[in-house]
Image 1 (tube, rainbow, N blue to C red):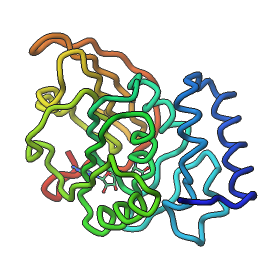
Image 2 (cartoon, rainbow, N blue to C red; image 1 turned 60 degrees about the vertical axis):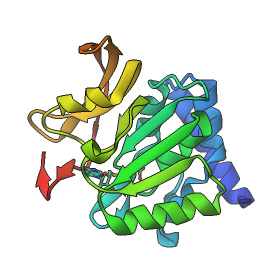
Image 3 (cartoon, protein in one colour; image 1 turned 45 degrees about the horizontal axis):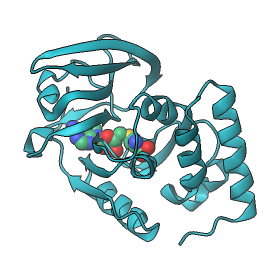
Amino acid sequence: MYHSSDRMFNARRNMVIKLEQKGISSGSVLEAMMKVPRDQFMSEALCYRAYDDTSLPIGFGQTISTPSVVATMVQSLRLTGDEKVLEIGSGSGYQAAVLAELAGEVTAMERIPELAERSMLVLNSLGYVNVKIINGDDFNHIDDVFDRIIVSAGVRIFPADLLAKLNDGGILVIPVDESGSNHQIKRFVKKGETGFFEEIIGRATFVPYIMNEKIV
Ligand code: SAH
């Protein structure tokens, strides 16, 4: 079991207080983010900034997501404890850990093999038994359907076939950008076989979603 130092505990508590001030209202999401040691998901050299509300480099040109963006997206999934969740673009594994605190089972896909491997080691060392990381860049290879889907890299064009991986009544959050680099975070609720309700829940900049070496 992980024992946080007092310094990290206080920094994490301050982060959570700030998240609440920024409008994160879900008690369970705030509690989960109080539990997950974000400092463990990045290099030691950057640990002193682990609880700043900012994205930070994790190697391979990728970043660990900004805490308030993680909180906004995860909160919008309305997790109650037993859902089956798919995360696409799990990077450091930080958000996968937050999801694991709140859902039943988390499957995460990461295209960079080194990140997939490293994040799995961190998650194992922290005792998360309900998360698995798959190395890959094509969600069509996952032969399963989910109650929730969260995409952590920004797409230019919404991949409509992703809705087929969602159960009826399921929720999908995804950053979409049709022009510049500032993504709209879209939230879809699936209604029936092909219908869905769509809304925009925020804006943020994400690293690009890459499939077959191409930005898509
Ligand atoms: N939630 C993560 C965010 C990491 S950044 C965290 O907090 O650490 C987004 C990640 O998406 C990167 O690691 C990138 O390699 C990955 N990615 C991009 N396109 C992908 C794809 N098609 N399939 C799987 N992972 C992808």
